[in-house]
Image (cartoon, rainbow, N blue to C red; front, side, top):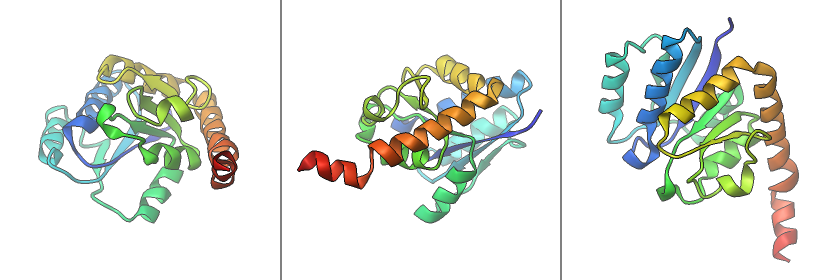
Length: 176
């Protein structure tokens, strides 16, 4: 089996639910899935998240990369096979969805994020799960790990969504 690179990026805050990602990762690892999971960011939950990783013995597949410049983040997005966006309704639009889709990632995103109903079509250009439902998050990630051709197709379709339908020119035309 080939390892899939999974990425999460943001501030480590309660309402962004990075701990849900670690809980899903434990279930995946326990079922024998091979992956790397990188967290980019910092925040008040960082020590708690590292403790959960240690408690679950995930330190061989989960890494905390710290904060980075936007261009460095985009480099990581472009290398990732799966991007996880786990915020709840406090997120607002969530521009990181645009960025991860533009980077060709297969995205798994919470239904509660402001941009999700506008940018994502479930099973077409990404996967949507119920905010806070770790089992559903796990199932969506598992589906992408089990179906690499679907993961690639969704990443390409996500890229096309951003470049053809949600770009600056189309937005300007809509405003006019």
